[in-house]
Length: 375
Image (tube, rainbow, N blue to C red):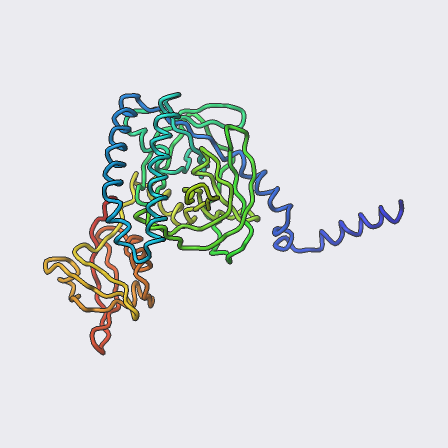
């Protein structure tokens, strides 16, 4: 017994001897993160007028039929016919899922469910697709573990990023996620956790790993998702994802799967969530920059300007067809999708610097951006 007591005291001494940053990587940090942030995670309900549901169902059916008719073009346009077929199959499943949700969930109880998390005493961040229909007059409510309900107003939506912000006036949140504690890009296979409210149950922790960054599935306009193996339950889109020590990793956005095979969960990175949320709170919108009139193509050495409108801002800035973009914003970059992201990260009327190779010469062009509208 004495030996056991001595061992316990010795173990406690060793525990206290470890610096906090070392202890924070263990199970205690996960427990601490869950204890701190679970009260900040809410279920979100959006009531939707039935006339809109019926109208939207008709629209989705028409779009689905158009998708089926154009399937041969989608498949033929891919560089890999098998991959194109899989992508089309997944896209079909996504539309079928939307129709199923419309018919079963919303017609049954007139609501859409999702999740969100508080980021200050009165604001909640969630996924744009959950609350977008509230602009039609549907009432938004949030609910905690004790079934306490509060009404929320839609502050704004960044449709391109899939981020929305709600404001709750009648309640002051005592616990919220610190947007200043954002994790740097963790290595692939790093341990992460999420706090969800599955099937209307109280806040629950789930764990997983990072599977990769900058995932593109050719299904969405703006893709910079983190791939994870976190569980994905109905109604938990919008749940926060953390490092074990409580730094924000991002927000659960969607699931990707093919047929009946297990899916992967895609997470919107924290830097996008924070950028969109703070802008929405400040101005009610997050407009994104774009350079219109320019068609780009990936080349071995960089990004080739394949077509250019003679009256475009890019042409007026000095760019020309055949130029090879090899840098953007003062950094060397040769991948099309990364250049695409950097342009979208600007705001309309900003100026972005492009480094261009023309023949054997290098040039710098400052190109003004205009507004990019979601498709």
